[in-house]
Length: 445
Image 1 (cartoon, helix red, strand yellow):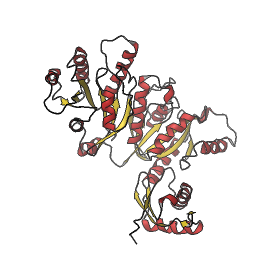
Image 2 (cartoon, one colour):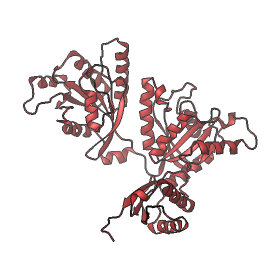
Image 3 (cartoon, rainbow, N blue to C red):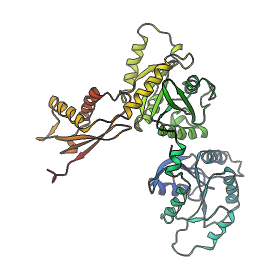
Image 4 (spheres, rainbow, N blue to C red):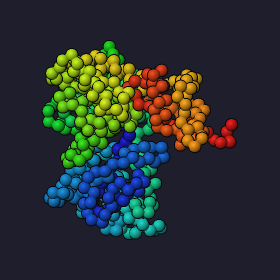
């Protein structure tokens, strides 16, 4: 199950961005007294009492305005509301309830989403100003007094927000069983993601169009066949940020990232007729950084003029283009003709198993001993790196903990060498790996 999404909304200049920055602990949003400074939605990770969720900051809503920028901001806010699981409605105690607050409240009630009413700028500790009690008139349950500048009341606010998140039991009930492999089909717009999902499901589950951005949201397609049980998550195309001018596309980026987070396997689709682009690298980077099993699927292979060497040439070029993820297998497919789709299923099952692989400590240290005997660990000023032992801490991705005498001596190049030795023995094809380096306590002999 993906993390909950919480949207912060309200009219301009009530302190939404200040609150956003306070809750995530970073200054991601521009904070300014000029209404309309936050024109785009900004999102960040937030955690409270073991609840992890995505927080979206929005531009101020002016329901009655015809100003082009304010209309665009209202549109973006509506998209954030549509995608959110819980909404924080921010108001300003210093101005009291104004007509715009009432209009925004009416707009939020129509959404049917849980709404937490935040009365901001309650900066003094003690008795509430008389204006605070006006906010009961919005009929949005109990208002919560907050000072986004000083942080007063933010704990109460987050506690109320988290009440609306699903319990662990509900998460388990809502999620597909472990027997299903969850696959996110990702890529830039118009590479054939929806066509692939339609081809493997045998029906028109997604709208297929050559207009970039047709698929606005992530959709699930459940497939059970001779290869196993799968959930395919079709996502909107990820565009280069500088070209994402449309609010709907920004909304799609959030949803696509959340889809990758839900998945265990990511099929990264490349357009064979266009070749590799910088955006393909960025899309793949999202899956790589999240530790997902990855497959590079070169689509529209039927549309490429070929000779006996074309595939080998293209494979070598793509291996160079995706040099940051050399573990990812490359497959040439056609969603249109169904070429190699059976092989794609086999690859999905294979890389999923590799991503979940667990290696015993004994076997790991056998490889470590052989590797360090073959290539001595690095030295610096007469001190040599000693790797006492290593163990696997977790899977998805396989994460290894190395206990050493000095972390600063464990150079990336030697870590990569060890990773290559482990992969040579155990495979780990299609999955990134993660290494945690720990210095053993000097008193621990």
